Image 1 (cartoon, helix red, strand yellow):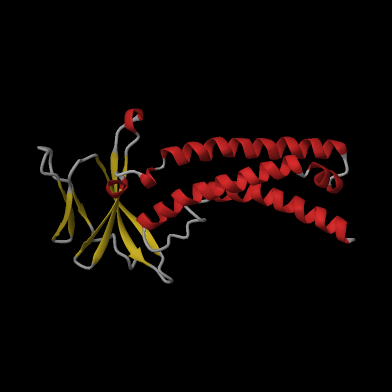
Image 2 (image 1 turned 180 degrees about the horizontal axis):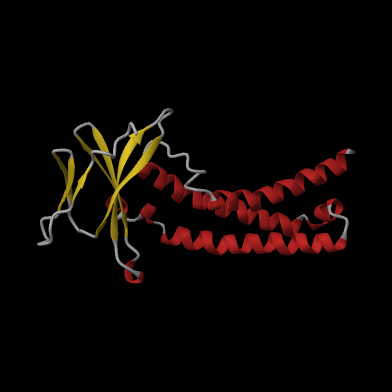
Amino acid sequence: MDKIKQKNLTITICIIALLILPLIETMSNGTLWGINLISPSFMAQVSGYLLIIKLVFVSLGLVGLALKAQTINAVIKARYLRVMFYLCAGFIGIVQIVFISLGALLNPLFSSSVGYIHKQFNIEGRTFYVYTADPGAMGRAYHYVYLQCPLALSRYELKTIAKVGWMKDYSLEIHNNNLTIHHSQSDKPIPSFDLTHITCTN
């Protein structure tokens, strides 16, 4: 393969990578393929910045698709394959631009509520993480409560404890290995969950 063909192939592969890699990451199980590094709050921040990076990548891919058409045509010689490639690549890129932009606009990374959405409690040598999902007018808000277990290389694993209804102000306590969620402004029964079978060792 001469240098021109190799250069054309390299440019085409780079354009494909700029369009496909963000899509693969988006479809994976968790931010950066579920690496779960340091804490859920940290990964939430990474996810917010990652949206911006993916938006840049996909935009560059679409620009490359438009400006390097001759280069791509030199690599994909069959006309019908070129048409399919441009249609698929353009569709994938445009759809990602729309959804990534929407995700960036709705992401709470730079809002004052980010500290409420991701809360961490250290109680009796155990770390508990509470994620608050509030869809607004689209549905009810809930708190998802997890036991956060440390793993090697500063990673972590979340073990599900419970899903409870939304509370404005709440606190967590442990009594006789039962996790209790207190809410001072509610007359409802205080939720309590047995932690006997929810440990970082099983």
